[in-house]
Length: 113
Length: 111
Image (cartoon, rainbow over all chains, first blue to last red; front, side, top):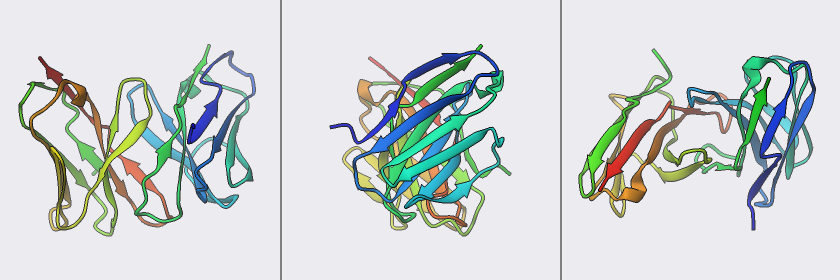
């Protein structure tokens, strides 16, 4: 059984398009996250939600909008895609609390052409 | 000073070798520390949490030095399957779950 799943796994699109990435976790965790890993492999948090409430909103362009319909899902919508958005986007989840492991999804490799 | 700093490597070692990775962090108020492992084109996975007293899990030993704001990971008797990138991860406080990942240290274990 997949703990944290993301769709799609690969996404190739043109500049200016709007796209969404979906994430679901079946671990019963309260907190979910979106991370971006760029070409230099640097993994950086973008957003976190706890029980559908936005907790962390790092400095990302407002073209990126997360949406959490329920605590098991956290989707990421990106408007007006730019070349610099090309990266691997990871969803993760954990129980609420700093001491807990975060479980990552397999990642979505986004390529903007 | 960067929030979490690691030597990027690569560390190329023969099977059976002992290898150590170091990491420094900038926020003296950090309370949670981890080592994650990331294989090529895969997601990061927790290797071990790091506790104040140091902790060991099989061939892996993690140490924390709060005074120096320094974390280490020691791998004994390296296996080919240990080849991966090792990420030092620190909670930066402020918001729960706000983990800061180092850029990782790449390890390659050769036969």
